[in-house]
Image 1 (cartoon, rainbow, N blue to C red):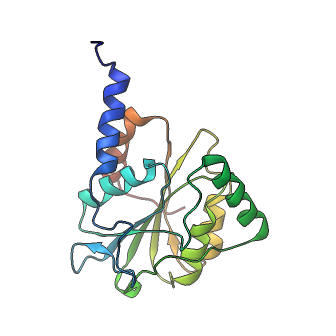
Image 2: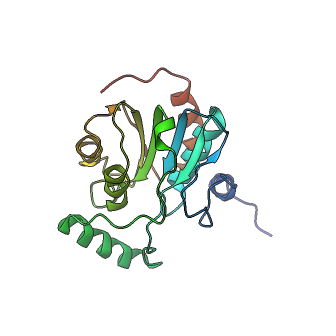
Length: 198
């Protein structure tokens, strides 16, 4: 029997974190009720395909009183990675905003929205444009948290700013998604420091 490597152990920890229930799954109510702590003024909304962004969302949620909302398209992206890339590119190039499976119920009660997503094609996934277009973010504080595969955030922050023009957008937490071993430490350190305006 071979001894597990340290890298294998880190991957197992992150996989276990990603599998923890966050309170808002694919079977979330159709009215889009956010799950979490009642009367919370903070919402953690995230979109994730591989689970990396979901891990960050879970860490944020567990660090403060907040509700959770998983951003999901009405029609799932293909299971095949390359097919998903092709579909996302078509949506991006065509300016398509895919339909949401559910909207956030009671968006007015939130003052702060932590908004998480991976980088797709050097920008925010099209479903993020959909979410921001269909919810009034006027006067809210948006704190982006972004995972990427090594090429940075691209135009994603401009997309957030243009689709939520009347929101206050704070500096984003950005992490290369393949740095799994640093996920918990970096997110927790970020949450412990004051956020500054862009």
